[in-house]
Each structure stands twice: as C-alpha cells, then as structure tokens.
Length: 440
Image 1 (tube, rainbow, N blue to C red):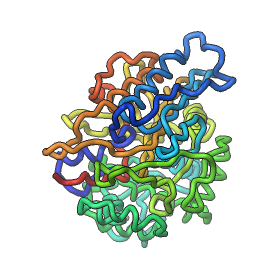
Image 2 (cartoon, rainbow, N blue to C red):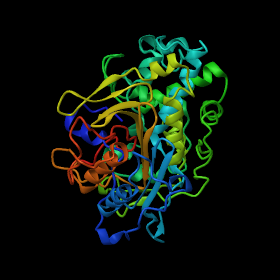
Image 3 (cartoon, rainbow, N blue to C red):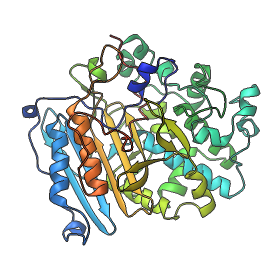
C-alpha cells in the first residue's frame, strides 16, 4: 500500500507485507514437522518436489520466529502440503494445511478478473474515464482523467483510505484496531476517505499502491452488472474456478477451521493480539477474501492457462507498469491485479496480501505449472530503525529461502536475516495494515 506522506524513508515500511511477523525465541514456539503430504503428493515428481527440503525450509521460517505457517507447492500434477508452528499460541493447537485464512490483497486479482470479464463483454472500456460509469463517485476533472486501467494498475494517483479509516495509526497507537473491530463501513465512505487523502501523483504518472482503487473497481462492477460486486465475483470468478473454500465473509467470522491471526504492529500491540474475528467491510473488493493455499494455487493456474478470461483480456491483465525499487530501477512489474517477479528460474506471476494478523503470498510460473502459496499468522514483527526503515530480521531470510526452494527447487541465494537483493525481490508491497510505521 502506498503512503500519503512523501517521506521516502517511510516508504520502505509501507512496502512490506508477506513476511512481516514478530521474532520470538525458538523455544517459544514448539517445533513441528511439516504435515504429511496429501495422497496426491506421495509419489515424487520426476523433476519435481523435494519434499524433505520444502519441509525443512518451511520449518526454518518457524524457527526464525514465526508463530505458524502453512503452504502448498505444486509442480504439474504433484502437490506438497506443509504446515509448521502453531495456529493458536495459548493452546498450542498446531498449524495444519488447508486451514482457511484471510488473504488480503490477493483479493485484487479476483476483482480484476471480474472487471476484465465485463471488458470482454464490451460493457467496460479499460481506457475510458471512470467518470463515464461513476460520475458522482469520482467527480470533476479527476474522474475525467482517471481511466479504469489506471485504477487496476495503481497509476490513478488516488490516495489510500486506510489511515483515514484507522486514524490512531497516524498517532502511533493501535487503538483504532480494537475500536473498529465490529464497525461496518460502506464502500462509498472508504472512497470518500481515499479521494480526500493527498494524491500520490497525476493520473497515469506513476505507480502508487492504493486500496481505494479496488473499492472503486467493485463499485464499477455493481454499476455495470446491477449486482452486488461480491456476489458477482463469487459466481463468475470463484465458482468458475471451482474453488471450494474461497469466499467473501458475511460476518466478522471466518466460517471454516482457521488459525488465530496475531498482530504486533511493530510492537505497538504487545503482546500481539488475535484479530481473526473482524468486520471486513473496511476491506471489501480490495482486501476481504478468505481462502486456502490450495484454492489460491488452483485460481492462478486456471487464470494463467486462460480458463477464466479470453486471451485478449488475459494479455491486458499481464500488461505491466514498473514498480520502482528503493535504490532506483525496477523492483517488479504490476499488471491489472497481479504482478510479475523475475526469479533466477524465470518469471513468476502472483500477488501478496495482508490484513491485521494475517499474511499471504501466491506465485506461479507463467504457464501455471510450478506454484507456491503460503499463509502465516503473525504480522509486523519488524523493529523500526531510527531512519524509519525496517531492520533486517532472520524471518526475512527464511522466507526468501522458502520462496526459492518452492519455485526454483533451490534455496541458493538466500542470506540469513536479509531479504534477497534484486532480481529476486520478495512481494512485500501491499499491506493495508502497514500504512505508517510507529515514529521513533
């Protein structure tokens, strides 16, 4: 998620998501071996999945300080399912594969697919101004300058709503997280807050992540289809992909078996509290989905193989803009609701996501053959350096090693305690809960 502040030093904090967990002494979380493989994962793939290495790599994330983590790794028809650590710190209930989890900004890929389906039906023009469809939602010159495409690739220049929706975060307090646990806030109010935030640039000028864009995209779906956007996405994307454990929550509760989800917010919440029960109206079509690691891999495989969109619209979805790196250059490339990373073993596509207490990432090879998704249940463990950046932590290096093992079949290149340098950046760019780091 992007910051409304121009302070470059704090941009690093807002650009962290999937590996934000709190470091604990290794003895604080009992070591648990990765779960036994599913029946479809018993036979080793010919070139495929080193289950022993995957289990050891996942367990290293727990040993570095993670409460609990679960993962699904696929190579063609082979699948490895793993889990390590705990789903509940108090009871020491173990983490298990296939638990449901809040997946945060991975939701954006589902919303983008739904919009592109309407593009394929000639009901939405990607390069039309959003004012053509929602003149009262994005009024004036802004609405005439911002296109649908700019919303989906985060070049609209519209600021994010999170700080406005959770105002205590700007005062180095997590009070808003508890005060608003059961608050319902509608998409119109979220967009009003986002439009009232400082613009991040002129329309089309540059990439700047904003959840407001995808709340507007949901309102656009409702306008052109006449349906509740979450219902439309459920029928035309989730069910079309054959997903059984993916849904928009209709209450503050996750319906199926799930881990508790602990938030530290850089030490402001001490000890970390469970936020698995939370009204997700603040997240909507930008951030609110619940899913499983296996469902996410299935979704991306079907998407990348052309099962959810016609070829022309999939091409548009994979037409990217550069995401600038901290030291200059390009860190990754963002399309319409998904992004591309170049790893040593080739380009992968996917997204990451975070909500209070829960982090998720999913990445797939371009043909959907090799895939990795994981979810974890402790967020924002990082310490903040005096200059406003996040200090290196062993969790980062452990996640890096797992990514490479899962996607490339090797952990070579991971450096203990430090994230991998480009061209292997980790997807830590979309955290709606990391709008601002505590000031020091």
